[in-house]
Image (spheres, rainbow, N blue to C red):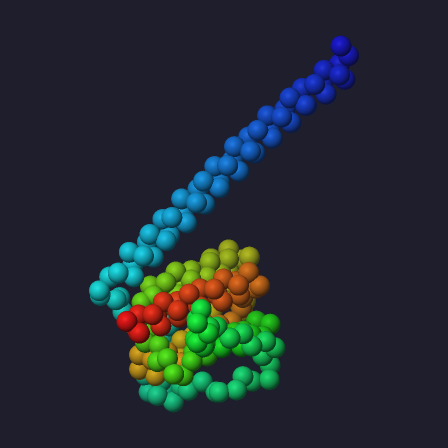
Length: 197
């Protein structure tokens, strides 16, 4: 057998070995994803059963207390918002309207709902596990020079007392918008169910 043919034989064997390893790793990754999903859903379920709700972190204090009373969302979206997405329950009740522009999002909650900031899973899930995590990730990217400060994900909760009127979000991409939309809808549906029970 020529030297060239021997090299090709070794390369083919090496290729098969790599393909086998890739298959094993992909299988392991899928198993890990499934386990993570189970752990996450269990944590969320257990977290929502706590009677005592942790106080809201200061990161969501959008306005000083004296301004909260006048922090009413405007009923019409400003012209710069390109898209309006209604978030509704499975029965068709309006939970909120999302006003989306290129880099900002206004979530204006339904006026007839009176969503309380202390109703689970608002703080434990939406704020702590979604919004804060996105912000922390961007802060880390900015710290390592992979992102500029003006592109860091940010959010404000506009409320009057404990009643949330609006969530204002800046600096997100299409993937985050999808995640935000589904997380916000799920959170508001769960809050609505709790308020009705």
